[in-house]
Image (cartoon, rainbow, N blue to C red):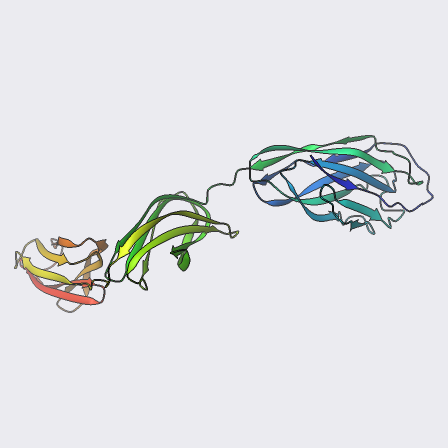
Length: 339
């Protein structure tokens, strides 16, 4: 156990002394693993006192942050931090006014620590404690006690269920899904240990979320992509990476929209199309006046043949336009609904 020593420099003051209940207690608290926090020592008194001292023993897995403060409720009560050593920190109280600790006034002294990374219950104890009388030598402390500091395991910021990389017409497309998120501010995307982008997180949620990011600046070669989540407090957790080989040239996107069948139709019509590479595809239906009447598709599709079917049973007879969009390229087919 390490020890923080609190030593008193007590001015000699003249005032009658009433021996009564004067206690010093560590206040139990609960903190997250790795967090910085204040351990409070509460002093209760039934009579006037002029100073105090205490040694706080604490587990070696905690780190003293070399800070201490006194409660502001006693005017004139000041603390002076001494030079720390490897095992103790000296705290001095001085210039205490005669009215600072009159009956039932009390005080709180707080010392700053950093909790360990391991969860559990840890004991902080008081040793060699005293509350002093007007001569600076009497001990009128009638009781003292330590307390337990509970260190809680910090929740995992996200539960990552998938992380994949694949070539697209624009570059390397990264896609990932989360089952839950806790205080997730944003994601960082690494390529070969260098941050190349970020995507906003969902905060705290128990719902599934999907994300994607496309690296449009990637050069030919073998690359490793890593994903990291960053909490509101700035804590970053990196997840296992994935490797992908980029060819000498990113393949240009090409697609073909075939003829619609049957055409004329009633009540549904189908059009087939082919993609040369994984790509984002959108498909719409417009009437003959150019007004959008339906959206058929908005998704990332694999390379190969696909089909779209439009059910127009609630539409009026007439001429309609099926439009397929892949990146910035567009192809259309005219279809006729006859009822």
